[in-house]
Length: 301
Image (cartoon, rainbow, N blue to C red; front, top):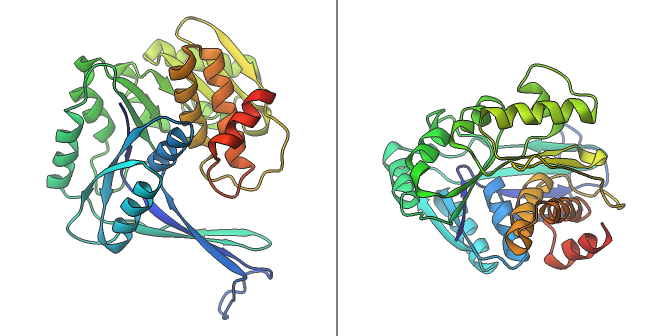
């Protein structure tokens, strides 16, 4: 089974305006929509759209938390979230006019009892399961929570996928995650440098492998992506042509697509191709990509 963890999910409330945002005045929208969001939830959604059942774990609170669970169940995703006693799951407001403005909420406090409940759920994972950890850690949690989770599962032969940045990522490499996915800027930041060439990106990806990563997937926005595998292979791929409508969830979609591609084919090259198709399909969509849109791009790559 595939499991995703979203520590701080959100409802993304998107407001469209024809005129620029006018601070201090009453502004009126032309349309609105909302989406169930959070990096792990985005991964779960794309996996399901590609036909892979999975379980979404994490924390929710209040009436907005109830909506998160309802939305996931509607998509056919098993939601096994821990309900916090206080607060509400955050609502992030995204205003789209001539410029895009975002207001991201802080989210509810996660108490130690609830965190221990998550640990107990994760302790039930067994050999062959896949655990995907994505995103930052809320301020109410210990900074080493990723390390604690991987340390508890270290001897269970669970495949770890980690999409995080800087020390949060570096500190889990000792647990030999199956896949990590920094972008080229994040990879450079881990070594206090700016990476300008493919050769530099490959060199620093291999440094992460020396620390413990098995496969390193580096996304480079419009320049495509690169995969350095545990077998010493290097794969490089561009992006398909299309109109970018949405940047939210593209990286999460790439992670999900890679996992789906690998599970379906056992090929790292095919996994990179599926990851690229998924990330691009979401970028070309108003919401997370459908399975049909992903496969259409996959066939073109």
